[in-house]
Amino acid sequence: MESHDPIISKIRLGPWQYFIFTYIWSWSFWIPAVLLRKNVFDFPNFLLLGLGGLGPFIVSISLTYFKEDREVWRDFWKRVIDVRRIGFVWLAVAIFMAPLVCSLGIITGILFNGVFPSFETAVEYLSNPIGFIFYLFFVFIYGPLPEEFGWRGYALDRLQKKWNALYSSLILALLWALWHWPMFFMVGTYQSGEQSIGSLRFWIDYCLGITVNTILMTWVYNNTKRSILSAVLYHFMMNFTGEFLNLISLYHYYKVMWTTIIAVLVIILYKPQSLTDPPWGKSIKISKDQF
Image (cartoon, rainbow, N blue to C red; front, top):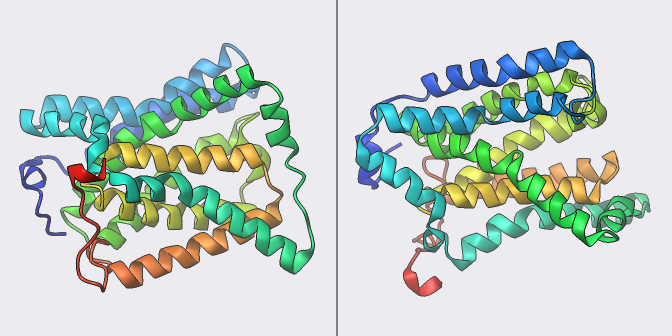
């Protein structure tokens, strides 16, 4: 994909070293966690889970620092901390996309099946404000923050140097999904409990869900001048909304249906090449006036 960002042309490495080293790092901790057959959220098993999850962060930081130009290194950190490049509109998209599709899924479930959610998990979290704050911190630190340094912040740029935004998203979705594979065999994880391999929820909520969300994350990322922070926020809200509401499978299926519809509309309207060219002419421009 052609890019108008001069930093892209300065990137030396392709994406494959990142994928190889990230898999090696993460699975070196996760496979022992699987073999232990103990709850990975109990101490000290949690250390294996947590250290494995740092793979995307450590590998992306290391490769950028040791293998790339200093300008690429500085640009990397600017994309992490610079809120201004996101703008109000895309900030709203990153934060409210997950709650939107969850709400649409709930409404669809009520209208077509007459099933009303209980929101027991949400009520339980909110009944303990201190615990809820720690829960928010955990959801942010474990997953969105370390992962997005690598998957979007490092790998996506390098994939898009060779393929268009849509193809890059599909490749990234596959490798991102496979990276989580050991979690389906760990005792205590969400994947092993709610999305067991081969189940309908595995195929719809996990496989299709991660694919369409990857497309939407590329859309947000490309329209925010490659903001890693925007990807972190999107990922955080995706994880937080799903775990906080803890909806039954029916709502998840409808949620993924609506996410797929939105992703297809984005592909049609914004074009697969870059996902930044809407039919009305110009993408929403990022300017200092938006903040």
